[in-house]
Image 1: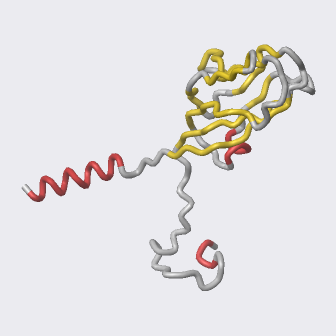
Image 2: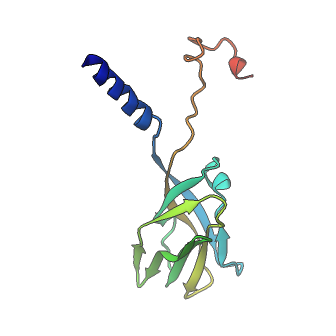
Amino acid sequence: MKKLILLLTLTLTMMFGQTKLETRMYEFPIDLTAGETIFDIDMYDLTGYDLPEAVLQFVGLDDYTWFNTVRIVYQCDIILENQFFYFENGGIRNTGTHNYFDDENCYFRSNYTSNDSFNRNMLISITAEFPDMDTGYIEDGFDYCVEPGANLM
């Protein structure tokens, strides 16, 4: 019976112990002053990681000084256009979470603005399996590093 419990515990640990989802917040620039309306999402440029998939959610803007109306949509090759957020009449609406997939040409697009002076950073949360940046010192038998980066070469 003890062996069965141990085996089940190890199996569950192997199945569920490897995945760790983490949520981080990033700024994504939206500048409509230059006439651009489509803003490609390059996950590496945004986060510093090549994430194959993630969940995006609008959190806010870095600046709420005057602008009247703006609507930003989210779209990928395999995802139909979907409202990401919109600001109208002094109120901002978050429209939920959106799935991101690498190599599916995901982007944000302005589908309406009342003025072309909108230049803000969107604050977006990204939930994904971010790589573990463990240096491996302890796992490799090192209690400390004699020279910085010595065992990373």
